[in-house]
Image (cartoon, rainbow, N blue to C red; front, side):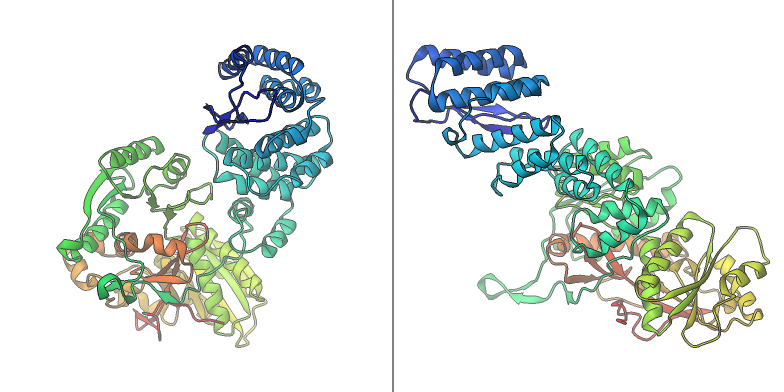
Length: 601
């Protein structure tokens, strides 16, 4: 990170820029300099500065102190500050404190005074006086050069932690995160998570509710609570303005609002290994949308195998950038996405998953995935929009089903609903009588009761008839996992009446998208469970020309094959899903399902 010009002050006050010093986040603070009229002083100051650059901080500090003792006024104050900074770099904060004795703040320019405050604040922390450190930082000007702003945030976080306010420390570290590069960023994130991990669940949840939806600490709170099995209620999409509205542009020509297609794109997918079938459906959907574009609008496309490790995904990204990609789509694996987000991204990314660490993407990039948590939360809101206030939860014991169930519960309770009971269904069992009683014993028969399920169709076909045999007449709502993707009325009649959220493209034609019936008749990858991934691939391509617009306009949405797509304040693409219901064994859209905007309570 480049530093600021250094100065070698004369006995007088004239100051002229001289040269640049490289700074590092290791909290090196660069100096400012002016040529002095006396060559002896100039040479001695230059030797001191060279020693500083070479990492010989003892010699640099000694030389600066010699200079300070030979000078008066502004020059003496400046050289004492430089000596203290050298001693700090050496790890001698007690020596730095002694070097600062006799510094007159009024003799320093604005940045030098800020550096003095930062150094004094760090010394105060070292002396176990965090209150003084906080006061020093609070008096600093709001606008600072980037390296000084970083330093203030880091010291502020350490001070708040020392005073016992872990939440304030975490918020400062969250604000710091986007300004850092590894290894400093990884260290900062470890400190951030450690601070939040010491706060109890109820306090974290209540603090999160009081924050604005774009507060940078929110994704980190979500991460900590999700690890505890206590996710936050989600900020569900409420975008109302479609992208692409035709407006008059330069010369009177009509232009689609927000449309800015890249010239070259790269798609990173694991084309071999366990995820190859998933990658094939996504790739084929992406290519179908690419071919569906008029030839003159198609960007140049390269497809790279991202392999099956974070390292190979990063290598594929670098290869794509070297080939001139202007936007990279992928990788797919959660671990690879997290690793790539730790890199310095020369070209923005549309990741095809959410990192397992839960962190937000770097500025300018975005993440897009088919999250079970998003579906569970939207089922909760949909049920409450139907007047359901009490719910039973029955989910498979798979990880994705439990994630959906946790999200459903958090969202349902946040909306004022209550959970009558909850149970998990282990795989391989067919008698669910005990589980049904456990979940529904206090559900009742009133019109405000409902059942939420999250499981594959094979398990749901066994459960739903047993609910009816148990005389549970409450309506049943499910995540998309209940839908096999193909019509199978002989088996799915047992699911009649179950309402579920899913990708609108599965139930009817959408403007600007290839027809599903034609795609599935020609490509195996567009059939069955692959149909949803095929739609996901189409949406990944469709997002690219509008991605920058969506990231800057949270009220805008793109009508996608998997739902209406919008971006939150952290660069995460959100989906508003469509709704369908099984009737005579066929999944059919409910009223308004092809318009994926959710029903408002």
